[in-house]
Image (cartoon, rainbow, N blue to C red; front, side, top):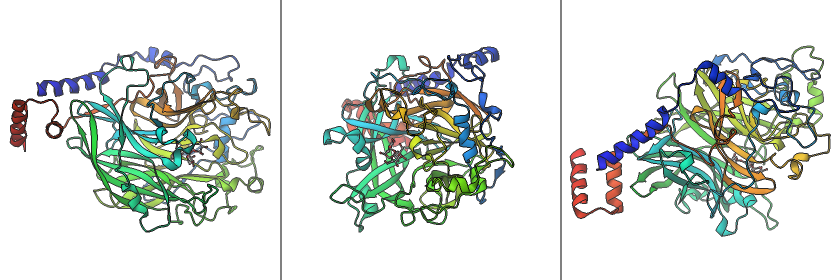
Amino acid sequence: MLTLLLAGSTVATFAGQSARAQISPDALRESLRVAPRPGMMPHGGRLFPGSSLNGVPGFPLPTVHSQKAYDPQDSFTAKWTRADAMQIKAHSDTSVAAGQNSLPQQLVMPDVPADFPATNPDVWVWDTWTLIDKKANQFSYNGWEVIFCLTADKNAGYGFDDRHTHARIGYFYRRAGVPASRRPANGGWIYGGHLIPEGAQEQVFAGTDYTITAEWSGSMRLLDPTSNKVSLFYTDMAFNRNAAGQDITPSQAVITQSLGQIHADFNHVWFTGFTTHTPLLRPDGVLYQNGAQNPYYNFRDPFTFEDPQHPGVNYMVFEGNTAGQRGTADCTAEDLGYRTNDPHAETVQQVLSTGAYYQKANIGLAVAEDSSLSKWKFLPPLISANCVNDQTERPQMYIKDGKYYIFTISHRTTYAAGVDGPDGVYGFVGNGIRSDFQPMNYGSGLMLGNPTDLNEAAGTDYDANPNQNPRAFQSYSHYVMPDGLVESFIDTVEGRRGGALSPTVKVRLRGDASVVDTRYGNNGLGGYGDISANRAAINVVGFIQDLISQKTQLSADTNTRMRSFLNASQ
Ligand SMILES: OC[C@H]1O[C@@](CO)(OC[C@@]2(O[C@H]3O[C@H](CO)[C@@H](O)[C@H](O)[C@H]3O)O[C@H](CO)[C@@H](O)[C@@H]2O)[C@@H](O)[C@@H]1O
């Protein structure tokens, strides 16, 4: 019975993956064609439009990035330049009415309905990640899909905008192998509660003056698919506030590891461990800006992976800022990225005069110095965005068809003066972990953005007004999963606050270009929080141990037989 049940769940999960129909190249091409909308720019209807770097009248032409690979230990840092980022606006549609989306339609997150369901009535949900292995395969465990989300308890009185200082990592689970059409509208995720025992995370700040702590984003690694050992990498945050509610010291951000075990029986999933928290990395002020240099520094969101070319060597990407004192006006011609004699090029002096040097995001890299992933060494950043954007958040390394993609999320509000782009996920492609990464789609970097009006006259902000642009902030924190599926959370739709999982969408990737697949789901929108595993971890011994430990509806006889099976298998 047990064997049958386990085998059944395995088959169901794998059958789900292999059931994809074979599709002819012509049909595939047709399925990727995006219907042009009225007012769409000249490239409308083209497949994968971004591969060519054609200039647009009135805009600069960015320098092509070679995608050349370097040793991960090398000091080369690729640049997301101003000329690159300007291609978002260059390729936007100037003919649309004020407040309407002007982004290339192939790169726009489809409209999220305003009557979206809550993921859970008791908690706000935002940044979400999955149970992955060293190759970012996404695992179910003993027949259950599991996700990890930043959550804030509504019942404690926290509003959605209070979430950051009260963030706790929560987990949700649901049975694997059920098609989205047979799940409840909200994805059917069952809330399991907080992952980290009360107070355990605070040990990282023991002996300091910090009074408010929070758990920010990270990733969860299944250390061995045949066991139940998992490693959480996350950001330990600590804040202090004065009586007026303002931060009085720079926040502390520590990239931290905590080990635990996943458990599952017939009825539910639960975790043990996460009692010991090992600080791994604090920004050094040499490669990565720290709080002494900038009270508004960004340092967080670890994601680990193994080097496919050197099995056993593990890296971590994370969000950082270029080291140095805040306000140092030192962006260079390379940061701007213009070609010689481009009539639309800005001079370094012009850019510095706008204050754009306050925005200096980077995507950091560290290498593990031990096999238990508990010691890490900083390496130079993989990509910098000096004078372009201040935040490149939740970076992930995504390896497909021999190409190395870095995906990262960013806000419209964190762009530097003179450059603009939507809230969404940005992509960069190279030929190795460290490369001269080429920003995707027209060289701009944008992969999937909320519908946004980039044609606003100075001093006008249609996107801030939900009556004018109801979806400019509909979704955020996009995370790219196997097969190009993308999950995110709902922020605000038609003025309604979200705090819930967005509908899953799908992007097709080809080289340095991508398109939203409008044939996926309903006009491009899949199920809310449809975050499915593409691999199954079956741990028979752990399953029996968990059944016994939970004394789950087993007769004394079955219990005895399972114990003898367990003894025999050890
Ligand atoms: O909750 C912290 C984690 O969330 C991340 C990614 O979603 O950081 C998001 C960030 O932005 C949010 O807050 C901004 C201010 O409240 C708001 O303008 C924006 O719309 C929100 O998405 O949260 C921090 C703290 O406020 C801000 O610096 C980020 O941009 C992730 O990086 C964190 O781990």
